[in-house]
Image 1 (cartoon, one colour):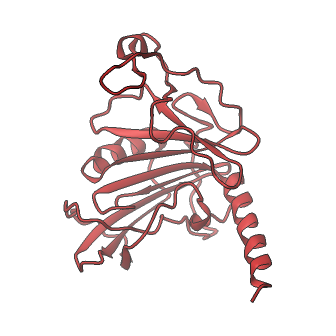
Image 2 (tube, helix red, strand yellow; image 1 turned 45 degrees about the vertical axis):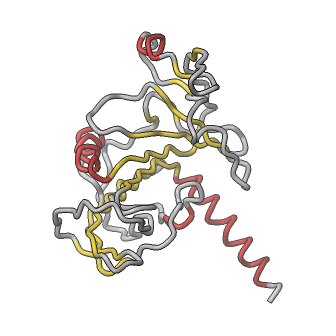
Length: 238
C-alpha cells in the first residue's frame, strides 16, 4: 500500500488562502460563488483497509504514464488578430487523438526540479469546458496530468471519472472559508492504485475553480523524498 502525501504535488499546489473548517462523508450541494479562495489538495489516507482499485489506468487520453511524451504538436495557422499562431480546429478534428497545444498558457513551464509542462489539445467533449496539461520529469517521462475547470462543471467531470475509473476509493466533504469570511463546501474524491493516484478537488485555487490530478505514485515518492532532504538541509541554517 502506498502512502500518498498530497502536499508533495509540486506542480499542482497553486493554493493561497482558503481555510479548511471541517471534513465529513456527507455530500452537500455546493455554493456557486466565484470569490477568490484556496484549498488544500485532497490527500489519500494511509489506511491499510483501503479497497483495491480495479480500474487503475496506465494512461490518460491515450498517453502512457512513465514513458516519453511522443504526442505530435497540434496543427496551427497564422493569426493576425492575436499576433501568434492559432489552433487549426479543422485539421485537429481529423486527427482523432490528442495533440500538444503549443499555444496553451500551460505549455512550456519549467519546474525547478527539472520537470516541464505540456499543454494538451483536442480534448474529449463531455459538457464542461476544461484544460489539461501533462508534466514530464527531468528524464522526459510522463508523470502527471492536471485538469483545470470551473467549479460548476465539477459534477459532470466527477460523473465521467466515476464511469471511467469506478467508485472513488475515498470521498469526503470539506467546509472551507474564504479570507472574506464566506463558507462553502468542497467535494474531495480520490482513487489510489499501485502505480497511479487521482485527486479531485471541487474548490482549489479559487472557490469557483476545480482541479484534478492524475499522478504517478513513484513521482509523489520522489518529490516527497526531495522535499524532506531539502528541508533537512535548510534546517541546518537555523
